[in-house]
Amino acid sequence: MDRRSFLSLAAAPFAAAQSASKPNIVLIYTDDVGYGDLSCYGATKVRTPNLDALAARGVRFTDAHSSAATCTPSRYSLLTGEYAWRRKGTGILSGEAGMIIEPGRHTLASLLKQAGYTTGVAGKWHLGLGAGNLDWNGDIRPGPQDIGFDYSFLIPATGDRVPCVYVENRRVVGLDPADPIEIRYGRKVGNEPTGRDNPDLLRLRPSHGHDQTIVNGISRIGYMSGGKSARWVDEDMADVITQKAVSFIERSRANPFFLYFATHDIHVPRVPHPRFKGRGQCGIRCDAIAQLDWCAGEIMAALERHKLTDNTLVIFTSDNGPVVDDGYQDGAVEDLNGHLPAGPFRGGKYSAYEAGTRVPLIARWPRRIKPGVSDALIGQIDFPATLSALVERPMPTGAAPDSVNLLPALLGRSRQGRDHLVEQSSRGIALRKGKWKLVPTGAEPLRAAGLPTRTADNTAELYDLSRDVAEKDNLAASRPDVLSEMTSLLEKIRAPR
Image 1 (spheres, rainbow, N blue to C red):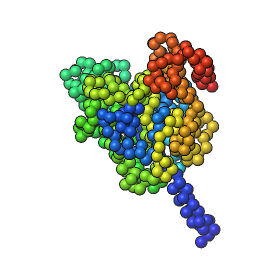
Image 2 (image 1 turned 90 degrees about the vertical axis):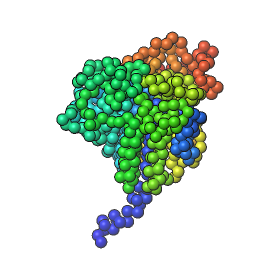
Image 3 (image 1 turned 180 degrees about the vertical axis):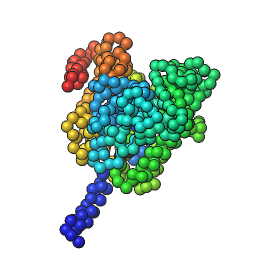
Image 4 (image 1 turned 135 degrees about the horizontal axis):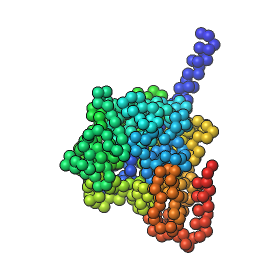
């Protein structure tokens, strides 16, 4: 045996030990799930046993935040570690938008891939695909593979937006070339019936908007023609994306992997599989929550089945706060039955108040995390820096510019979280610092991010969340010292860099 072979054999056990020390990472990123939507966070009208079990064996955070009160900017910030309001074109995207994370940019996925991870995404994307004027009938470029993902199976935008097809890696799944897809927003294409003109064809009627091309008896945002064989069945969506996530785990289990599993529940249209009907006491919304809990349970069961549980970090969280009526007459408002999707907090999706971004966050890693509850202020924008530190991957210059390494907090070893955090909403940006919350006068228009200006009054709002979680008592007039300090800090943060 030559010296090189001997050294390779001698190093093999060490290399194996190094590989074993790197945890698999599974990020379950849910849609529109509010702080009060899970039984482990106080819900009483629906049970979430799988997520409750996850929380019982991990750290449950009580002051965790998405970066925005809407989905696209939260997803952008989570992957890039940059506040979305700093970049033009990061508002809620249409289904025909080009990809807003530029190819080659450092992302959570690329950082982990460089650290030796196999990376995959399954589920909702809503960060755009292609580079504009995308031909859905050919190779779809750029896409997740161009920002660090080895594998992708996508809902391109949302369930209420066309195109209503899945994209696996760079191709639409099940597309018949003889029936090409055409997508347009703003003008009709083809002769497909619409909800506006053909309400008699609908099984789920819109409450506002959502009245364009009908797919599966549900009218959507945007116009679509063709692609009949490729269109999804709404009731099967959770099963399909969960199976793809489980399959990724199974084929990647020999080496460290990162799975970004982005569920669609409980976003509209809420059309859970019939087997979840009546699972809760708040109608269709509770049924969708029960389906979400099942999805999480399937992921955890796959990890257990392959003996991966002990060395897998599972993170569960949501892209923004809750909304009940978000465009369809599905009975969610009428059947709420006392369920409090936002828990004790004010607002919800789109809102500048706490419930817009304060969301569930659970982290479980049996090998390293002791069960508990943490009130550390933590943001999803910190995942790139924190997980890079976890895998001992130095952050490249310029990567994740707003991300902070909060690894001790994520592992439950420290209650010290962020010093401050910016919360983005359709009103602009607000600021958290310790117990204080500032919603500034007029708020920031954020026209560059494609968000509307604030239309409320011009009174600054300042809340002490240690005694007023519902943000009812505006202290701006009585605490001018804190108001001035918070306003100055926010101005400094949003100043051009």
